[in-house]
Image 1: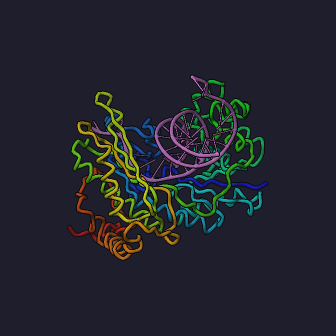
Image 2: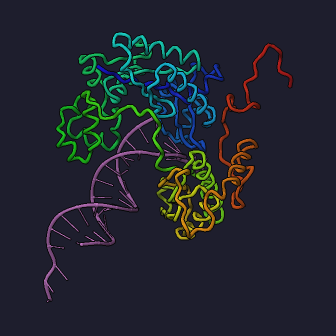
Image 3: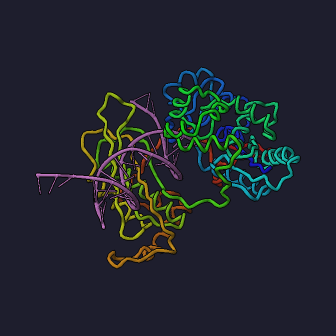
Length: 424
DNA sequence: TCTGGGGTCCTAGGACCC
DNA sequence: TCTGGGGTCCTAGGACCC
């Protein structure tokens, strides 16, 4: 039998904050989204207080204060760096792996003898904790979906010491009878509702539903989920990262925007970010799309959403071209009088930069700009973001009042240690 | 007053072709 | 005046993930 393991960092962002600030151990910790708008990560203690994932901060302020929950703005420089370290340790033990998200990785365990899998997982878990300091859970099963099930159990029951191995049918069966249908990987809110109508309350119940019924409910993906739960592999480990199909930069604004010029300047930021991401990936885009939207949660205000896109004759990673195209599109879709809350730029339809086809009609090939953007990217990298920027961009304040220091990626923010007293 | 951001895949329906 | 049927491609929107 061949097995797949899922390594999953426990409460990843909260654990990252704790790593550099051990005083937080045992205390409830939450990490907030971009504008400090809602909760995106919670320590076990915070979960126990009943703070849900995605909770809007303003609705939970009282609860957070009452229990002295430690609140942090998100610090992606720190989380990204620690994630890379965790992945490196995993790769050192399990060369055939797939980085699935910032805090999860699948590993191929087909080369590990079955009777040593539990030992292997235990060793890996300890090594990650010792080398990086992040606690993880590991689930093992015959498929990715079963590995996910196992890791949910490993997290739930501390007496398992962070590892659960579905090594026989009896354990699989027990696991599927235990796992609520809404916690199955690939079954979200809408599908849960549909399946519950058929009396499906746990993962095991899904196996009783015919493929015909599942399809009839328009849930072709769930047929695969069911197969995977039965031990039939539908998803393999993807060893190399696949090429991205789209790159986006979108934001919810701290305050609603009514002025077109202000909106244009905000959106210029997004175009610039997309350009930088494209160049980092070594790819060029044929298509750019922009959208603007009002606040959906404000039922009392008039609503508006529109998007527009443009297809280039030849693919590009030129920030200026993307930005001016986007500005033209905004002129088409902007309507005065609405309070805009969210906007974004999305580029797609990529070709590798070294496979670019030149077209005869556009003046200047993308390669003509190479030197300019190399300098642009280098300056921003070494001297700080925004050192080089478009005239249209302004300095925008994003609310991040409670961000911890970037301990591991900025010299100036290193954690001071030592026996001498810090001078003022 | 304050409700994340960045992705993927699937489907229905329109446009278009012969 | 009559006004088919089958196919493909594309896009918007929905559902899901972390």
